[in-house]
Length: 353
Image (cartoon, rainbow, N blue to C red):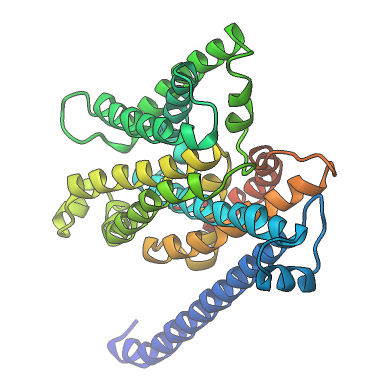
């Protein structure tokens, strides 16, 4: 191609690039609007739907009452706290999943890959032995267990050579999670009476999750969100490899440390509230990545909107599928998440990191 042909084609190429950028921007905007609308709808459904169905008029009257009526007690004391729990847990799991997939460069990564769920479950089991009997009493044990086990995974993955690489973190997390899960299962089988209440928490549920459980854990989730957003640009660069990221000015060890702390705070706080919930942190980042591409600066905010919507919808389904009984939300997310994930990972754009 001659210089004159190159010069003539350059404006056309620039026009094509501008059109592609415009289409991408519109797609991102529409995706955000759709996700925000879905979140609002699921919030409304979460307050309205249950063993006692409520209309929008009933909810409006309940919100304006003094709290003495039956509908007001259902809305103010049960439905709204449960919805807030779903929002906090959804944000924690969605952002944690996006960070861990970017950190380990593993499209099948989720918060459990660093042992957060297993660590929380083990220490909650210890708490039950020590007398903890309610979700509020499980909270400090779950948070402490998540912190301790995640740090232990980082140390094992690093093996004394500094920051662990993604493969080491993944292998260490999977191995330690398997061991701890086996220990918890053995404890529950040996003393089923003592650990009877732990079964409900271990299945992942929002039942009896009031503000006494939500408020102590919410600051941990909020701190994790801040750390994740601060690390988003560096996580983009680390996707190119540690050497190239360092040459481009990224602080690899600091970013990896911030990311591990963020995942611990996010998933630890979420698990402390509701127990281990699978698939949300795994599939939501794929949905966000399909809409906005591989930019973590966009994936993280989108995950903060999409994950609560998915989790609240799953909770609503769990309330009605065996009405008047309930199915724990952790079981519903497994059934909902598996086919969605299969559909998404078949799309190269969705699974590319």
